[in-house]
Image 1 (cartoon, rainbow, N blue to C red):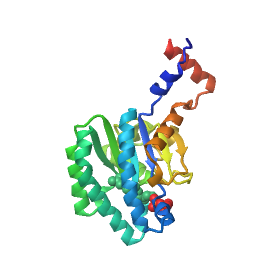
Image 2: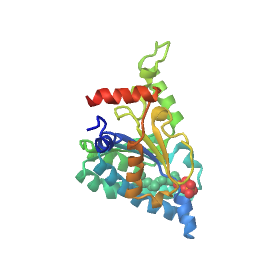
Image 3: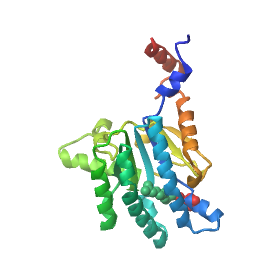
Image 4: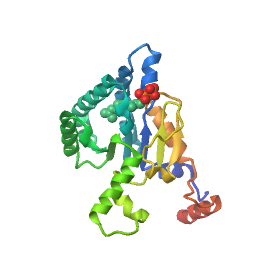
Length: 252
Ligand code: FPP
């Protein structure tokens, strides 16, 4: 038998941490002659489906970009709708998250959210804090550059005499501290940008772009992305030969 078994490979190569830029809600709604907000509503249903699929596949951490630091500049009506949608979804889904062993965490600067949303976030985080099957990270009022600056500021506050900063000094202060390294970043909606999402964490992540608009990105589409990832050879700066040699040694 080959030392490199295909079916084993797919299982072993399941990404531990997947991040998604959920793009295309507005276009999905427009194509149906509806308001942009109905696209966001439809998007929430896909969030639920993809969370379930991630849990089934053995992904241990899923990070969703729900609202960027730049999204505040959208029309006021849309911003208010999204805030209200987050409150409704949080309050409605917390039971399901508890039942399925999902721990919910928010990444981002929560201080700008209204008190009602902050309270729903805190309650949902507390209610699911002991769950271990899957960590669902909702990035909201999040930006990658903010994350890095915030980490550096926290580092300086904890070590005011610091003269030089190493990469390993920053990691523990990032919003993703304690989570597995990011393996796979997916973007839906046909655009091929990272848009200031997890820019530090994505340094060695595999990227996957889907033409599907987020409300059309179902469990099968998510599974296809994970399957695509599991067949790739990750190098982390090494040559292809070095990676194959390491895989052979691991298989012995
Ligand atoms: C991007 O599509 C989508 C957003 C900015 C909002 C994403 C939010 C959700 C899917 C709801 C998530 C809810 C929870 C509870 C996590 P777009 O509006 O930029 O679409 P467009 O590019 O077609 O205009």
